[in-house]
Each structure stands twice: as C-alpha cells, then as structure tokens.
Image (cartoon, rainbow, N blue to C red; front, side, top):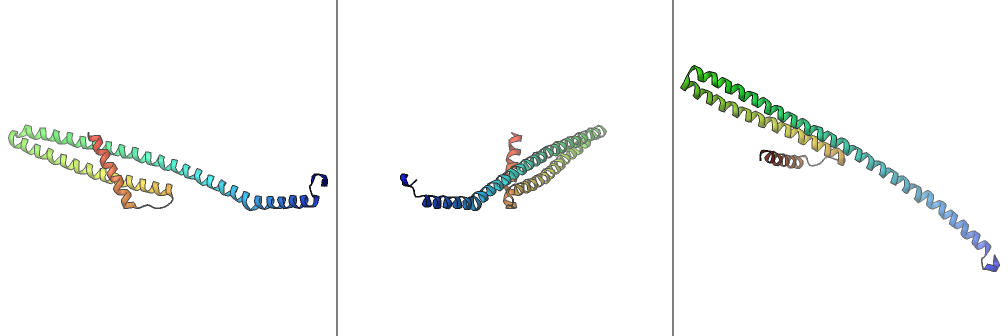
Amino acid sequence: MAELGINLSSFIAQLVNFLILFLLLSVLAYKPILKMMDERTRRIKESLEQAEVVKAQAEKAQEDFKLQIAEASKQGQLVIERAAKTGDEIRDRAKIEAQAEAEALLTRAKADIRRERDEVIDDLRKEYADIIILAAGKVIGKTLDTKAHRELIDQVLEESAGLRKN
C-alpha cells in the first residue's frame, strides 16, 4: 500500500473514525428522525380518520335537520288543513259572521304555524351550530371562538334558506 501512497495506519484510523461517526449518527440522528416521522405519520392518519368521523356526523346531523324541517312543514300543513276545515264548518252555520271568524282563525293559525316553525328552525340551527363547533373543535384539537362560529353558521343557514325560497 505504501507504493500507492497510502499510509496503512492513517487509513485504519480514518476508517475507525468513519465507523464511529456512522454509529453515532445512526443512534443519535437517524433513529430519532425515523421515530419522529413515524409518529407524525400516525398523527396525520388519526386526524384524517377523525375528520372522516366528524364529516359523517355532520352529514347525519344535516339529514336529521332536513327531516325535522320536513316534519315541521308537514305538521304545519296538517294544522292549516284542520283550520280550513273548521272555517268551512263555521261558514255553513252562519254565513257572514262565521266567514269573518273563519278568516281570523285561519290567520291566527298561519301566524302560529310560522312562529312555531321559526322556533323549531331556530332551535335546529342552534343545535346544528353546536354540533359543527364541537366537530370542528375535535378535528382541530382545541376549542374555537364559539360566538364567531355560531354567527358564521347562522349566516350560512340564512343564505341557504334564502336560496331555497328562490
């Protein structure tokens, strides 16, 4: 080896230094970095799974919301039909006086239905907003500004209700 210009003792010393450095780096840097990357992968996977669960819950809550609104509308329609039938019976008994009374009853029934429907919709919006805020808090891992989120959700629900009416 001396013919090639390589000092054997220097070469062995450099080889030993390289092996020591390699072992130190693998123990102190490579394994902790791999462990950290595996942990991060696991956390991301858990977050994605939790997001799927929250999404499913939100979709179920939205379906429940739609069903409850449909039921409220159906009940409102039944009340309107009952009020109209009552109005017809009253009109048959006393033409002029009964007709005025039936119209007043129908107007009150419609106002009550609107009020009850609005109360049910408001209650459902509050419940839906609480579910969304809770779900968002679970996904993000901390509690958010509940008032701001409730206002945003109420605004979106108002806009979507306006779109359905058009």
